[in-house]
Image (cartoon, rainbow, N blue to C red):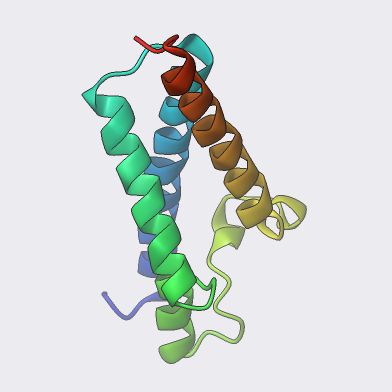
Length: 114
């Protein structure tokens, strides 16, 4: 079962959902000016994800694993995302995170963060 492409796609789907929610928590906190421990945990999670991706040459480790067990492309986002979105996921989510972090920093520096 652990060597199944379907299993990898399900795990990837759950990870994508988790990190998407974390990214949205950071965005909401930045926009509202209200932070909590959840904000900082979510930010730590997405930054850790970014480091993992960076150290893997901007390739998801699950994609690498899928290719190692025989997938032709290793593309694991096709289970739930349209291709045009999957092809741009790093730039979309990365831009959203960069905006959120920038806004958090501005709010921290101006004292408008609760």
